[in-house]
Image (tube, rainbow over all chains, first blue to last red; front, side, top):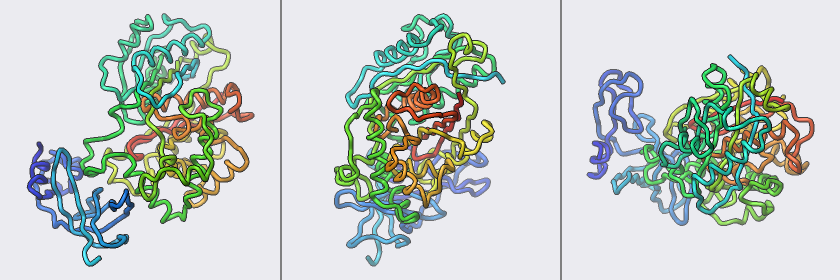
Length: 107
Length: 368
């Protein structure tokens, strides 16, 4: 498992930043794609906004933008239909693959 | 640079059942060589295999199966646009003089590993293409007021075209209403909005100008090529755009010295119905706002200009073979050999093939 995956398993979403040029690294990689510098990891604020969403069976899913314009596909928990731009809290885990969940606040 | 022409083509039927990679490859390569006048295996000095299958050393294996001892042989994988990438590699070998005649064969089995890109951690457990396609569709509806009926017309049109394509996996007509009432996959996708992973193989022979003139009386020239990869991860995309296609198309038009309005016929990468609407806009054939109306007009007037073989939705999508099958269709159209599917008086054709939510695109222009 990579560091990113190991941290996800502990419920922590780590974002990589380049030590050299401060570029945000996403999806996670071991080096910066801009200058090939080394990475510093920092825990996410775990909040984001809904960019787009759809629904499969009874579950909403969508594209969410979190810290530093990082975009992620994940499921959306809400009591009524989500809205574009709505604020969400992020919860993460790892079971063979990453799982990202977003909870709509004040839905 | 030497000019490069298509001089021979061959295909298998596409099927939704699992298939044997080696048998399929042999069948399409053999059909291709048998139907290419004045070309014997000894003339071929390059063999490229395009596939997402994990089988090893396929370029050499196909060469041995066909009795060819080429200078160059290897496999090429680039997800859904492996086929055009293989053709463009063959073009490069010939135009640089490293090779004279290259056989390019694409193959896939219906259950292939190319449908999911595990590397892209930004997709989480939503790895399957239906999820990004739902995002693109919802966004297109929201931004350009695209209706579900307009999306359904893409599929109905392409299924209709596929009825006249003997290689297509489906020869069943699908009405707009059938598409709109087909099984719901997500709130924004029906099963008939989606292309289907298939088994199948397509082969093509490319040759230098000197060799082409000896092999065929109807060479089809590759006059424009454009390629662009913007990322590997879907979540870097702007949802309403396929930037890689726009850049690749502009490069291909520039190389061919043409404008989009000169395109008589095009095979575009309709992995999902929304992809056709986005592609014809990025290719500058129409605009995003008018793309639904454009396709509706094609359907109502029985104009086969876009996806005459049925596209990926109607013909099926054997990933490694798709780009080659698209190219065969445009080559046949320019030779006037498309039988019931023939569009009259075609001079210039286009192929658009892309991968992983449009993160990479290839565009080719052909002329007769």
